[in-house]
Amino acid sequence: MTHEIIQPDNWAPAKGYANGVLTSDGTLYIGGQIGWDADQVFRSHDFVSQMETALTNIRAIVETAGGRVEDIVRMTWFVVDKKEYLAKQREVGEAYRRVFGRHFPAMTMVVVAGLIEDEALVEIEATAQLKGRDG
Image (cartoon, rainbow, N blue to C red; front, top):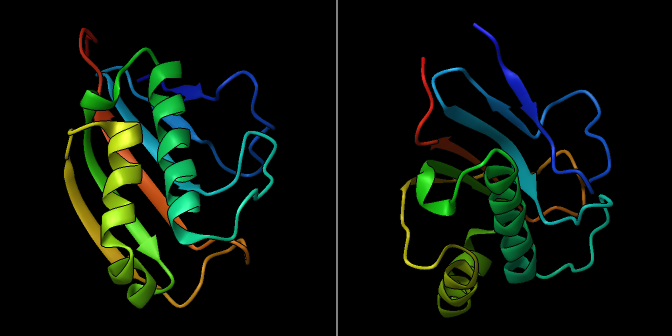
């Protein structure tokens, strides 16, 4: 089985991991995306902004692989501050819909003590099933 590494063209290279791996059956595994931009720079230290950037990063990987956000079937969110997430539900929903519209895949949220990048407030991984792929 051959796997294809998915990396948006304008992104800084991933070091020691892949942002996306596409299998021959069309399953796209998206590594945890955080709230930094294509240059791996945090432009915000606000939870909602970082969340929106992480979702935008996921969308970019899916689109680079030839898919759409509607192809995403599962997401796992890792957040460092449960209270902040709960306090900003309206803003979270608005930011989510700006990036993913009304597509809601299966999701899990896990509260963690910290993430590898100290500035990261959220990390989101995803799986997509791209249409039209043969096994």
